[in-house]
Image (tube, rainbow, N blue to C red):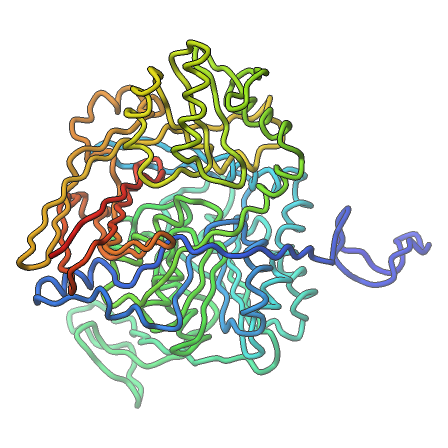
Length: 592
């Protein structure tokens, strides 16, 4: 793949310079700019709330006026970085990434349900990313990395640095790409991360290290020298004397040491499965590894970014060290895991969860309405029908209505589909939509009774946007879950109390049978829930939350909030189930 000006037989092969080439290599990166959609704003962490409640305080509005909010973004990082350029080109001080670097990458996730566990398979989005990355072998991987490293360089500040975590599979290839993009003169270090593992090798030396490539944007890169205590090896004879003693030696409870500068071989344990920080999450790295990088190449207040953020290790360490941060990942489960991790940090600064505007939806719309309807019907396993205005297909004995690609399912739309079912003497209809009007789940039974029709509300999964061939690829369609919430109001103290009373997951068939039989209470299906006590109809402001962690698997089912003024308030309750699906409940309360 590395070619020079002339071929080995002395004849000119058309290549005019030394470089790294692969078939169909593209050096111009397509930049699709999409708007960001704010999904959720979090003004305080769970740990802050617990501290405040313990001391009789409220932090709900304390951090809400900050001009800067850290950003956790779900989506394709190529699209995300291109969309960030308008605001952040030349402003990011440090980028740390841990991209996939093995062809046998595994996106399956172990899910805990109480004391039970099962394996959640990769989503269609993750499988597509895997195909696009490795579908043409090494060539497609190199192009994927090339495109993203070009965008990262544009985002870096002049004094910025980038650390790329790799191993023996592709480390040597990526280094040549980084030489091309960042310049060989801006290569700073190849860091060897040496760690302990339990594997035994038979016909080779044991592989116990990864590579971290450290490049700068320019010759002005920021760097803070890191030091550590280097303990001397003691002879464990009867007198236990030091081997030698230096003039600048010091001693503590662990022995005699001297202060040394950190070199490019790092002995940081990767065996942390028993530590408090292990979630678990595939490819998760120890916080001490990222702590060394962030301390060395950034200062307090700097912006640190990780565009393959996974479980959020970079973001969590940046938060603890007083840095601002931007993180993104393609996996919705990773975003949810990182959110919970950040909410467990005392003093966590405000952050927001963002999605990209639906570029793929626009493509579906451009293909025409009838082709869009046929495509969704095919994915859903339904057959097309004609002669109706609001009914588009049939699955088993149920008719099917498909909502528009650019709008939400409304009560009026459900009634129109139900009316056509009534007119044709059909007893059931499935309503498929991308989003649903708030509170519509509570009206479904009433609407159904009005028309004598059984109505099912079905979420069109975002994974459907990534499908290339609807005949060969399948996605899971989830019915909307049922959530029952009880509210109690104390007018004297202007306090509302909220309690989860019931939660019914609509598609338990997606769980293994042995797991399903052992579940005894509705809270086992809930991984996380949060409340916006003053929902304004746009962005969800997370004012309270409870969630499960590896160390604490309990889930609170009660919360309360004291209002400062009388009035009518809308409360939005958001539940995230063990599949990662959101279920919302909109409530209205009158205070005073």
